[in-house]
Amino acid sequence: MTELDIKNKITQIPEIQIFLDGYNMNSKLTSQKYCIDICLFCNILNVNNFNQFYSISLDDISKYKEFAINNKWSASTFNGRVRSLKIFYKWLNKYFKINNELINDIQFIRIQNNIHYTPTKEECELLINTIRKHTQKKRTYLLTKLFLETGFRKSEMFNIKISDLDEEKSSIRVRGKNNKIVLQPITSEIMSELREYIEKERKTAMATYISLGGIEQSWLWVSCIGNKCKITKKNMNNGNKCDPNSYYNALKKYAKKAGLKNYRNITLHGLRRRGVSSIYEETGDVLIASKFARHASTDITVKSYIDFDRERLRDAVNKVSQKNRQNSIEEIESKINLLQNEILKLKDN
Image (tube, rainbow, N blue to C red; front, top):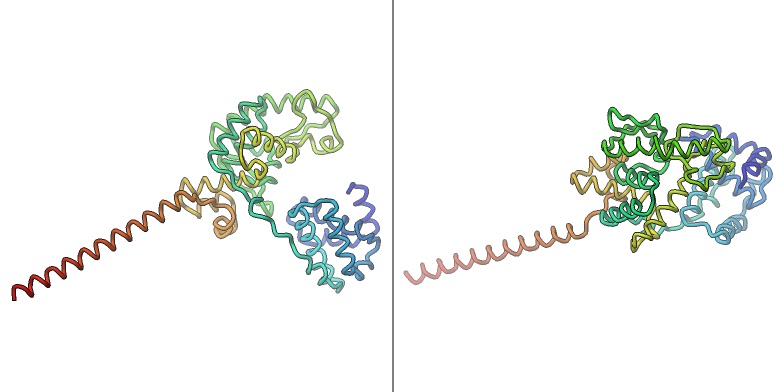
């Protein structure tokens, strides 16, 4: 949907804006997502006034699902849009008594486990080396290294500004969930590489961007790098901020070039999970890994983030088994000795 389509829909149905203004939004990005998902729903079902929300039918829900299938929405895209609708209809039910049962009955699509693939340490090392070997651009290399060594979320990583770098404390200030400010430590080596990227690659990219009519902003990660730089309406408005999809496409390209068997399953969140798993493997402490990931609970860390080493688990099981077997042998030998002593006593008598 274009910005004009969204504005027209909100003009037709001002209650959408009332929902966005009144609902407790955690961030501007969340508000924008709800707005797009709701307006898209209205467009698909030709909802042009508020009263039509009262008459949404089972056929309308089927039409919405059919649209999703025909447009090849991924499972995560479908689930995200349905989640927005369920929250919106919960609000409609609370304040306008609009029935939300049909929306609540829409089932989320179960996402296969390979979507949550966590690359191994060896795969990540190979990926880093391949990026370094095949490109002189620091941005892709540094982004990959930072995802692995800080466990940043995508939203945290791509909203970093130059002013968020604290060289004295060798840390990066990020805005996490619920706009919580966190100071994440990094190595002095990465800080030095970031400074080099800012003074050379980023400086050149911004000079090109400004020469084409762009207005400078302080985003750390920028687009418009190289001779093929073009100003689009999007990066004109966002200060040449790096598009996460641009980096993700480059990441998959280098993962394939590195010969990774599961290169199709490499994701930005997979890099974050590898970072959290590495902290756990180094410390053996779930609480430290959870604090590193900035999770509200260690349960989240254990369930979805820590990639337990299967070989280490197998070795542990074998050791326990061998110990139990040894204990059993010693116990049997002890009983035999007792019996032999009893037999000797009987003979003596």
